[in-house]
Length: 98
Figure 1 (cartoon, rainbow, N blue to C red):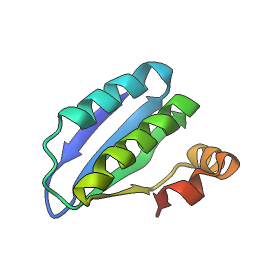
Figure 2 (figure 1 turned 60 degrees about the horizontal axis):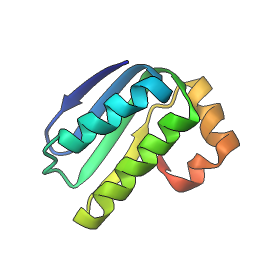
Figure 3 (figure 1 turned 180 degrees about the vertical axis):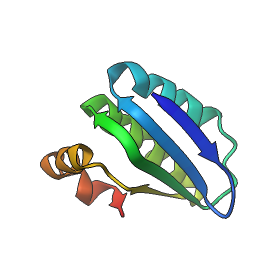
Figure 4 (figure 1 turned 90 degrees about the vertical axis):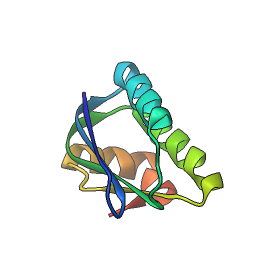
């Protein structure tokens, strides 16, 4: 999985590849190490091919770590496969999906 981060008015995290058991640890570590000054964090999943339950947990962990700082997390551009995973697991109701 590749992770590219762009700082600006909001922080945009571009994910490509697979967010699964192996790569979710890298994602979580990278997000925890990132200095986030922006109020809004957008996870762009347009190039994400697959997300597992471990990937969903990683997204939820990031959301929970941002909340006490008054920061918000949004997930954008879900691929059809990721849309289905979010729908089946109910994560469309847990995370803000655009």
